Length: 263
View 1 (cartoon, rainbow, N blue to C red):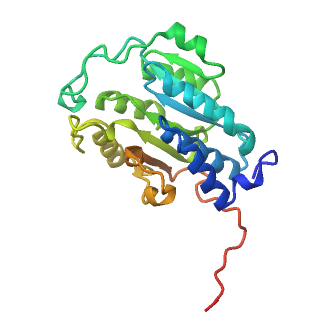
View 2 (spheres, helix red, strand yellow):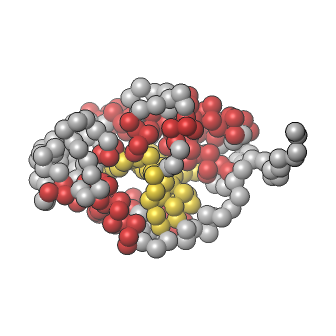
View 3 (spheres, rainbow, N blue to C red):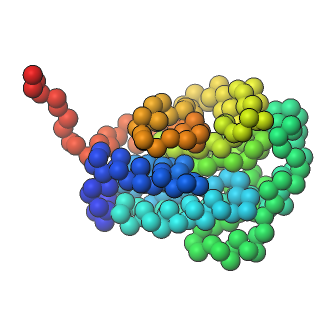
């Protein structure tokens, strides 16, 4: 546990309470959950800092929320949280084929007013351009280990490019388990997502191609955060880095866990 942190942040009850509070945000509960979980993991591993990324910024409301969360939780967790957003800036490009779900998305959707957003941001970095190029710039900046990523790139093709650019680095670029939110796995009735298109297809292909890194839906999350509920719960996955040197490190605040006979 980091020396500068509040010890209650890391107890099982304290963490559960903090997660429920952070995930009660009506607009971005998934960001609250991801930031708190990642910060708690970084702190338990005695790491001083972590990165939280938003892929697909659009107008910028999510990036502003992520920045606010990083400010709110850096001090109590004892972990400095650096925020970065990635976007083309000019809206969505044309879809490539059926896997990009052109019945939902069209070229030009979700354009950004870059100047207005940059004026609103306080500390977050904003990377404008192709994800392959800008991810390389991000990695060359010696960033803190990635602990949370929001994937909101809409297209299958864009998500695959992001996986190639950001999920295939050497282990020191990540926490051993990275909380990931996939926005386009649940949506309105018209979207009709399936495992054969979009983000779900990209996840499936990533898992098939990677031996030591797997994206898996967080099992039982609805019960962990009850009474909070919402469609965002279906989009929380964990990137497990089995090749990470800290993957096996014990993280529970209790050094010894026993259940003596009481009945």
